[in-house]
Length: 367
Image 1 (tube, rainbow, N blue to C red):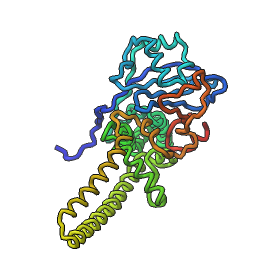
Image 2: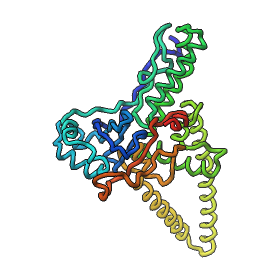
Image 3: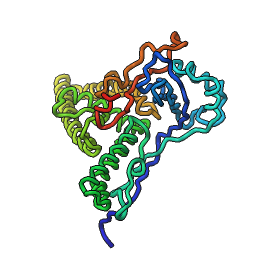
Image 4: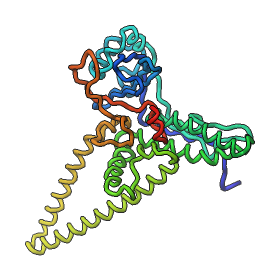
């Protein structure tokens, strides 16, 4: 038997942060912008609402995203209960949804977001069969990674056909070599942005904070956070993953060295105090005081971000500074025109670029 194989296979991940959704058709007023996506999030992450433009006349497709266990996440919901929820959580948008539309939305069954999976280590079979797009790398529709990566697949395949002089067998082999590793990296990056609870803090929130600090202190040494990296042109998903792996190793080395230095200094200080006052208990007391102070600070920080089931956008609204290069993404809408303008939403609303997130800043400029 061969020790190594190039056998085609699909890797599937268990969805540990499932979300369901219902689509809601909505028309925005003429004085609202019709060339951007609108997003709203409740503070505790119960409801996520994204509205994407269907045309230039103000017709939008709203996506009402809920947790799987939410009482509204079922078919045949009471229309009045749904209206009350919209009035409470989305007062900016609720007046724009007609009663007959809301009744139809309440009755229809829910839809499920896809789970994460990727194919590999090659993306072709034989001389004329190739998979690309969602068939090769399935992700949840956050940050536009699914649609934009599928379009990139088409461009890369076209380049491979040109390079192979339209020889299909050679072209699909070239495509596999160029894109298989990216498919794996894309899915792994996307999944790290969607983990719930403690894992979400480790794989998404903490890296965002570390990258914000280190990139701000040494931008030539440390790259921006992963979301900003995904917007950079000519940077592959594999390139993003490798760069962030390098950054994380260097950050860990610096933090570890700093902690070691602090620990050594604290030990020496405790030794001097113990020698000076001849009281060994003072060393224990000092150490306990430092430990309690650190624990209190970390606990307060975790309460802000360590909420089970957070979606990526739920985390972003908790950050005090921008995490992308976009001029419009996550820009608070201060004065949304609405019949309920005096009523405060139980969350925040934001504008996002029409093109979503991809590997190019030019898409945003075209929007």
